[in-house]
Image (cartoon, rainbow, N blue to C red; front, top):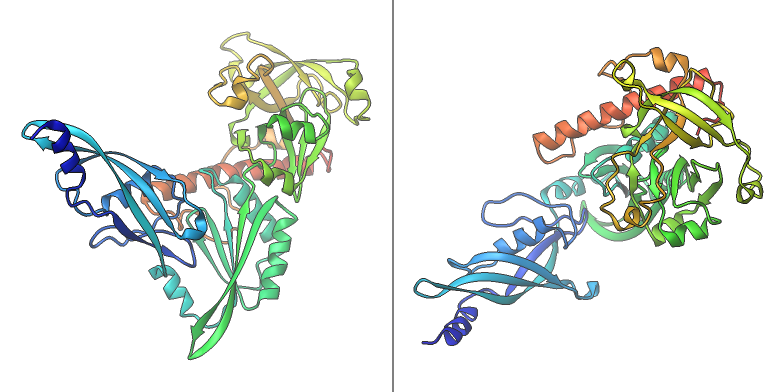
Length: 433
């Protein structure tokens, strides 16, 4: 048999072309995969992990080696998807050839064990799922503190940590709606609502689920705005700081002080991630402050703060070198010689993304964010910052390593958050960002 015929025969050889994949109708997770597996994955179709698990559930691969898997786009209403598998098969003794086959995965809805256990509770009528689909969870932690301060969670029947966020159960739809409205005033959110009837105690009960996706941009984060978004915000510079995150993203140009507001609708129309997170800020000492004349483009915005050229040095460089930086900053009104200020050190910035590469000639070395107060400077990180929380952070993670990482991330956030509280108290409400 020739190589062409042998390859064609191998492509038709016993590979299962139709596979059912179970998706939990409540939490949206996929699984389990393989005999004896109890793992349910919370992810979309595209991640390599899910494609790999789906591909591993295909029967009839035999000794073929899986080289790759690529999803074929299909309308979501079809409840199925196609995946093209690239396989290396032995078509003749000692001869291997790459073959491809298209496997149809149909989505079958079921209920995972975790949701099945919760569904058996007849008391709750509405579920709010707060989700942050990024590796870092600062925006979720900050929202959690707003919830704790306002006691917005006091009517929740149950609060549980889940992969990527929190689940809160309420006794009625109206109570859950008020909670969702509260969340929407403290963060730009993308909310979806669905209802279905659930058999409980031989009767039919309507249960509502709110899927609330949080914006990952948090206070003091440095962002690179898409060009269209910057134009929609009054022509603000694409490199901006998030001064505050509420129902709107409050942005400020760190070089001119120009301010803009980005609505939740505009953000979710074209999303972006933080370029640098507030936990990555560096401490600098102010050596000199020289006010500058505002640019003509800045005058028309009636800026409250004036711009200054600030001479700074890294705190970590004292005694090691005499490296200094002249920084154009919007904090000219609050900075004086001898002050300590937090900011982003961009001297080793990575221009890998398409947004930052186009701006590689316009990115400053240093971006100053906020002045530090005396009590904040004197306070030493304790490594065990106590903040009241809704759940134990790390409980929703699937492994010990992920749980430990989540705990460390929360401790870093707690130190930063408490430092901001100290600074806010010391400055008596003075705006510093």
